Length: 402
Image (cartoon, rainbow, N blue to C red; front, side):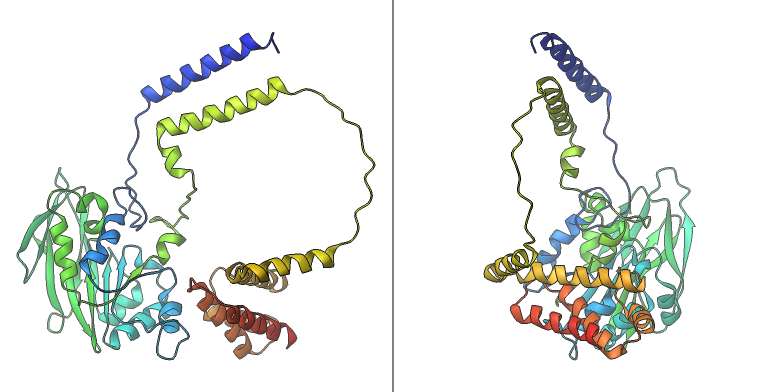
């Protein structure tokens, strides 16, 4: 060990010197990806807007929706099995292309019942274009400074600047008789970029400049006034903020990878402290390891205690009343069994999945629909009780017994 000490000191000095040299030369780059993620503090995340929602809608409930609107709104309806009846404004900022046809139908039913839908995105799902008879076009921003100006009608908000804007999306076709124009964007001349669409007993607000809601623009100069103006058109009611697409994928469609160490690894000093600690730990094990042989004891063969183990674990869960853990495990094992037995993708539990499972399993559709709908409902809840676990177990047993 004494002979290896000088070598260890030299290695430590080299590592520290390299870390300092890389830290001095390295410049941190800014991630300009348009994720529109309410948890992201990056320039084009929307965490600032998301945190301000309780102030914008004071005394009203703000709910974050992590499910497709088709399942969430149907569950939280008068005939559904949710914990409340969904009423208010449903807000979607960016990435609306994830919406499936059944979710669009459910959103339109939601609006038809007297509620509000607000979508800010460059384009919308084709079914929404066809239903509302709208077309969106794009004009390239040829200015060197890439600046466009935003204005709102009926509110004293004019020429709010949006920079880093390569072009403008605008409504090239709309029903000018029944639809109300609420705002414009301007590069060289004005384009309609914010409209109000009456639908049934409710209203749909469509906006084509989602970058206005991002952290970069809300924290720069007086641009927050433009977003305050946009939101002021919404009725004072409960808010449902869409987050399904943010946890499924980033703006380019890829899964957004996160870890508990992601923030620390973004900080240069913490990153090198972490790497240095790992390297020192490895070096310690290399230089301190010795070959030691203890007396080998006679070990008796293990007894088959499977049943006793199962009883012990089940008693542990029962005594701690950890219903959520048991429910999560039963759902996980059930879906794994479905994937193994019927070779089906269980990532999205919708009507199409129910039809496929019915076809492959030969079981009754109503029985399958009961267990799948109940699983979707459980996933939308945060608190669980013993009766939830018992009911889930009965549904699963009924599926296998028939």
